[in-house]
Length: 487
Length: 99
Image 1 (cartoon, chains in turn green, brown):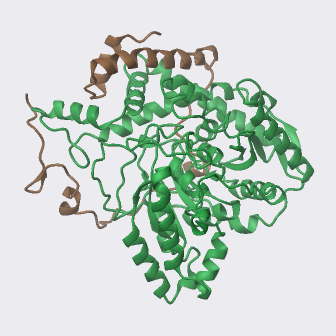
Image 2 (cartoon, rainbow over the protein chains, first blue to last red; image 1 turned 90 degrees about the horizontal axis):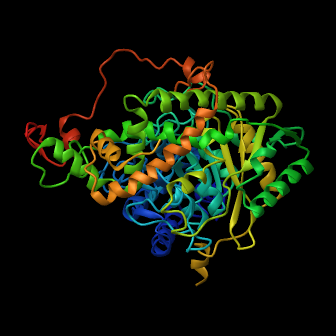
């Protein structure tokens, strides 16, 4: 898969066309979907029409994404396509408006080829919670792609599209990126508009980018980032020239490592990969400093109180009245609500709604929800203290490479513990990026994660790019679009 | 604190979920285990700690997000009803409210 810059340059110069580029992406998406189940909708006619419009446009040379095929997670609104959130409760829902990120991508000339599969309402770390069947990992189809943005990660890993959008509430962009061997970027809370992203945990949700290479993630972030009057939580902070930041080297940057986070529960091959990455950064001239996040071990507990509390409130809107699915044969309004929600939601969503309802209920609010918000403050202070000593923190993205389907599905707590390295960033509102660094002995990708202070995306991209340039990850998965042409 | 099947029933009622007996039996031990896990937070002394307020950064808090009080275009009745399971005469129709 060529980079965005190369694809765009050939289209703008007339050496290739948007139609040919998009057509090839749609062909691969359709062909590989039988194996991967990465897409819930592929819009061939819409995408080809739009590509033809771009080809015919007289000002395509002003569009930074002219003719670039992109996939969008099915919890982000794109007018004219479905938005199911991987759930039955949204039924045949087609949003009447575009998310702000969608508008910005379209204005930049991107061509959206389809909507990608995900865990229901972005709740899950394995994609096994999608009502439409799980996405398969392109590296080994007996394994999970990670979650919840598993479809977006698989579509990029399999070479169908150079970039895709996902959403990250507790690691849902970074963890599938790690498990599928691609780049996954979660921006600072307030960096990218959430307007048109279906809400899960509103104080944690952020739209993120999955890409084959760091430079492509930088280009897309620059387009989607910035203040949006439709989302009051977007901040008035200048959007940097993220692509330019990539040209600076990493020499002299301070990289924090918490030894406590590399202990118990971490797969030995992941630990080795991270130790190698630490040494690699040292060789590149970065200074490695010891840091401590004393409350990081409590992050999962804090996260699963706050995220479920917010979810129980956000998901109250699915009641069968204004849109989506409605259960038949309910004699009275209250029965209709209860039947609709019981038939429409899957088990993990119900589990989280009930947990969230419980921690917010009378008599328990102080013990659970308020307590969690206090420990969240302590965790935020941990990060602020650590960033006094370093420019970014290096950790694994996930404790293990991709696991097999069914391995954790009956044990929700074991599944939650998989998010140990990623949830902290959402609780503290800081940005994070996962990049592939090694292959395990079983041929599965391992990701390293870099976390930075608020608004430090440029530094994170620079650090990630420095590593990527020195240690290019050139392996290809077993299921890959490029091989279609030779068959 | 252990969560019983009768607790699950109460929570489901609060959450407007008409769960089945099988679900109730499955959820009770699972939610109980998760609640026990999150209770490890009790080990931390937070008596002098202020609770976090959402996810906003300092810059986010300082951003003025109010706008001029002027009429702007909206979806309109037709589009707003377009996705409803049972629209009728310009309304969302629902089953009877009083049972």
